[in-house]
Image (cartoon, rainbow over all chains, first blue to last red; front, side):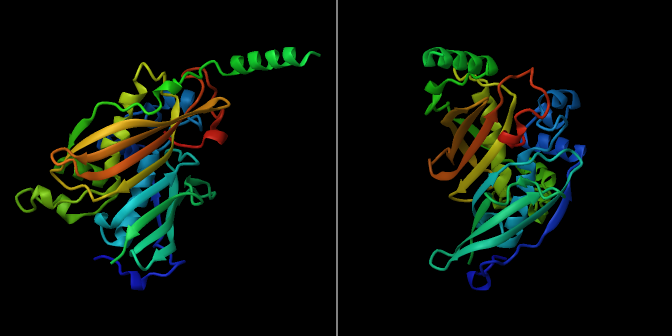
Amino acid sequence: MSRAASEVRVGDALPTEHISLDQGDLVRYAGASGDFNPLHWDAEVAARVSPTGGVIAHGMLSLGHVSRMVTDWAGGPERVRELDAVFRAPAPVGSTLALGGEVLAVDAETGLATLRVWAVLPDGAGVIDPRRSRAVVALS
Amino acid sequence: MDPGAAATVTSVAARTRSPGIALNPDRLGHAYPPVTYEVSREKLREYARATGVVDPALEADAAEVPLASLTAPPTFAATFTVGLLDRVIGDPELGAHWNLVHSSQRFRFTRAVRGGDVLRCTPRITEVTSRRALERLTVEVTVDEAGSGEPVLVGETTLVLREDATSQAPGEASGEAGGQG
């Protein structure tokens, strides 16, 4: 069911959600997406090349969850017109992320809403950076 | 001290600090041969399960729900956009390496991807820049219907490469680069 522009106001919040990303989730995502960079599953490689010195989640896995949140709110994948994510803080394997979003603008002419979206670690660090990450969805 | 001599010393030091800077700026604008991708039911299911998407149509038996009535989650597009980056990273003319992180990602959709779509995906280098010991590489992947040439979406991936593929200490340069591989 698609969301109507008449029901949406600037400042509206999307339902928040928490997800945890364990090693199994990263392996599953690697297989589903074809991204087998060992940074996401091999601790020895990660010790040499990871920004944290350890295994970190794929940025696209966090964005996949944010995209799911936006899709559910907007009323289906065909409603999502644009995703624009800046990956900032790495998410170490085992992290819990808080996902969220809020409406920044609604264009009554086009029916397009611009959302700020994010995925943050418990200390507030932006895995999907809240300052610079956006989604554009078509309302009905 | 002679200003010219001081400048020479500085530039030698800068080169010594950044031995791995190697991206070829002449590759800016280069397009790679297109890759054809077919959207299958099983791959849609795998992707949905891996990203927490609950869609009864994707889980239904193939006899109940036709492939063409399935709609992909938006970020499923990563499989045939971000998924093509290994061809770019492996391009011997570009001089990239795998000590890199995924810094930003954009998708602009003309329409949603559907089951059974046959897509033609064309990667092109749209940014090669250097700043201190970091290099930015942006690859745009244009995705069209293979048969009609009608546009479907455009993906844009920015990677940040760090200076050396093997010798870097953990944590170095991460504050500036951000990103997550």
